[in-house]
Length: 512
Image (cartoon, rainbow, N blue to C red; front, side):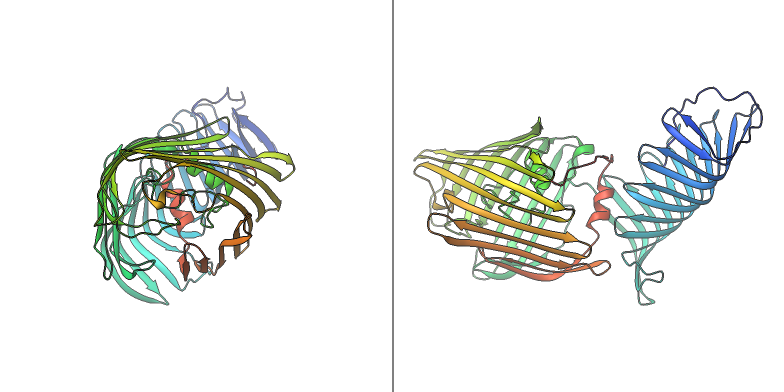
């Protein structure tokens, strides 16, 4: 974001010194506005002064003075320098840049990226690593924050990982000690290493769970899970995933769709955790080709007619392909698996396939549109064949920014006899209604699902949240499967998301 000048500039004016009041000069798409300009024919150096702004694409750099060394492809901006683009705001005393080597250096730096605020003595940027010296970071908006994370040096390798040295937490003026070195993963395709955590499993109670995943190389991931709960066999498993996906375009973890979780849980009208229709489209149509070999023992099913906690897969081989074409999001996967529903039942060898198709939002007028989705599921085993197909039609309306609502109707057709009851759909027909409000510090989401055949309200979900500086108290409730959570989120996700991207995409989106 710091490199806004191309290597080739047009021929320079013939005068050695040119002084014009509030002029504009264009260099192949870069617009520089200035009060006074000077040019040295011998050195090829431009000097712009007064109030100077340089605009390129969506990036704007402003300051009191800007020196451009055309021959050496270098520049210096000084005097209250500000750099703004859609990803961040940077303020500094002096900004040096080399658009040939794509490097930059800044002194006395203030950076605001998302809800994170960072101050550092220096910032150095190269194509592969960003380095901050004597940095302080906080989510607080106060000039003198009550809490800060301090570090001597931070090296960030965007989209890969970061390393911070001598990390300490300053809380209400008290320094709570320092960690010699801390490494954090920034590759959105993996979990990284996580510590064991307390968890609750429906019908079982509280226990301990752990999951982590690591990159073996740029295309292969090794993952493992483990959990222990009262009066239950321990659950555990491993997987090896080979993926063919562009890291520069992959901003989320890559795993095949889980056939034991909610069957259509990645739908905006199916799960309150899906924040927007666009998020649903990215989940289904994010470009990828995955192969997975896995083994899982004593795991659980979710949002099914029969909820089990001891389902095991001796082995499973999965291939999944997804992408978007003409605005249509598509995902297909196939599995060869050996699966049983409990520890005292035999394994069933079978072939399972799933397919999801999501249309773009077709706009009728303004911010009113409609969308279609289709889901197919099929199993073929040594015992039987079973499958279902679901179609969904939805209407969406966003009257203003931060408010979205809609209704959807879905209908399913089932054939054959399932190997297990959890293969079935929960309801054949369903009418869904949703309302989202997310403006300023307030968030409210509500989702209701009705069986139109009987008039039964079989699921209600809502989320209430309130932003208080860097923290977000929240309440999440779901009727089926039963879920109630209340806590406080540490609002660093937006900042981490920016660091996870190796290449920033700049687009102007519709509300859906």
